[in-house]
Image 1 (cartoon, helix red, strand yellow):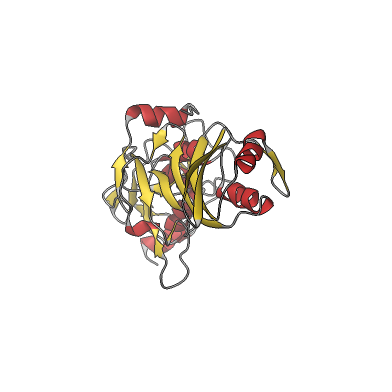
Image 2 (tube, rainbow, N blue to C red):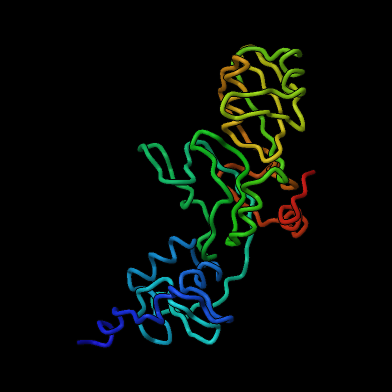
Length: 260
């Protein structure tokens, strides 16, 4: 039996089933915290035999490791990843999760390849365009994606005319089925054309599904949803399919739950 085959058998100490020593943590968690992958991806890395600890292959993602243990992924020693943060202009027909359909492209085609572990902060469906935040900092991503402290702003194109009365109703707040009370921080008519209108709406912790429910309740047919701001980060003139590095004030603003 080879040394690798012996390593497939995990001892009771490796399983991490009990409490970890004060300076230890699970192997997959250590990989995820270093910025190389999500927790689920890190667990799969370990189970598939890609990870060695102190030169020995380990297959238990929950085994306890300490800061003194040397971890290698695919034969390359693991180092703490430098945290990187980006604003990305998501084009139409680009999916942030599993792509479906021959015309749908996946977000991974556009993400910076030289930085490991970069993932989107939340999701946008394939047909929604605009600002998407990316980083290899899972805690920061969670702050950007969820909660009511991070305000999100959209331009919504609908068929026909949006009346001043409809804008007034939006601004006052609307009770929506299966969504609850929706209280926009801002709602205003942006522009009106022959066949369409565009209104701007900002929502605390805004979700695209909330906008869809709002338009359904107000009998507005959506043609396009375009996100232009997340907290202090604005899309600006960034072109579709391109990304830029965030400024320190933008990074800190998301972390602190700032909305401008």
